[in-house]
Image (cartoon, rainbow, N blue to C red; front, side, top):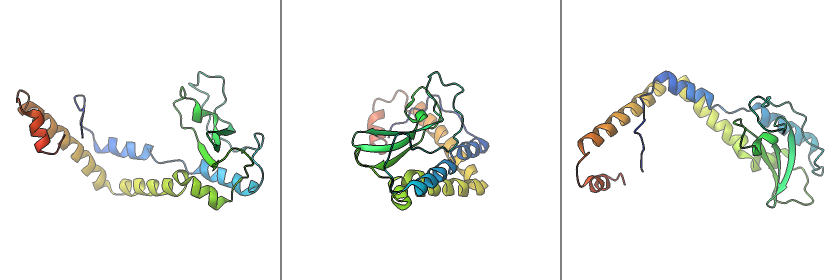
Length: 181
């Protein structure tokens, strides 16, 4: 593993906590999409049949004329997806959503809720598991403190290694010996 930590800074427990909180994934949008799937299962997929679920307004800071707060059906590369406009707008620094409906583009029917959740585990069961892990870390104040301490210890140790081996002709051999390269 190579580390580029020349500009690394020590972190605080509060920063680790804030980062962890900010990474909790939205479970409301997937729930709204699942309601739409349930109401429309076995129907044919059509461009004008998309969820009317409200989405966060990402208009601010969006230099494009697209409306990233709307859903659309995208058929490409042998797959059919339900996605937001913001999903494919790289200029927008907001989360977009994309859900796999089927592994084909023609004669696509909306799947059952169970099939849909299985195809989109990243938005359902996997997201719930990641959120549970994040909430468990947040509930255990000692863990966020231990993470911050470990990061800071690593930075200090790396900087110390760099300083004592700065002019050593065998630095790469030493790193390899230690399993670092």
